[in-house]
Image (cartoon, rainbow, N blue to C red):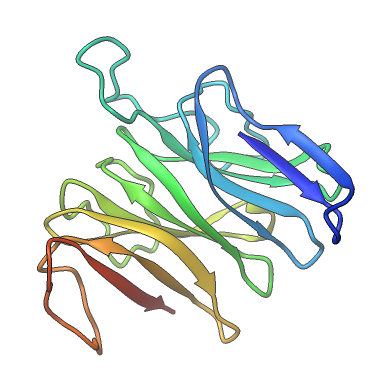
Length: 211
């Protein structure tokens, strides 16, 4: 993948850098902290994806098979912070379990906490202070929070029912917490104070607010 910063008018390239290892990477999202430093999330198949001050320093996709029959996806999510000039990584970490994990959304809170979301079918996805500690279906959404600077995994949880979910986006709110949006095909997807409680089609969108 690449990360590129343009001037406000778009007429000047402030920095532009590759970011990845020897296999495939895909970007999932980008967010800026209060100092304008870029934080990115995505997915990688590279065991040598750069890790710096990582909460998970190595790839964990042990169930993925490079030889046939290979899985369609064989990734770990990653979360990476860049310096203001883009020349250094302030932190960089894998985030995933034994199977396929996709990093799809990122947001920075008022005090610098890094909120991320995506999808996983790993039964060993790292959880902490989880409201749902186990995989609910074939594929679940996940939501996690890293401390400012990415030094600690403060919270991480599966989010899903008996079928398939994917969290596509996350945003922080001024009072604290986060709002997550995605899609589900689970009739038992967890709801609270819901505008619509039942699944209406093959897939429904979901919006969920977390404290």
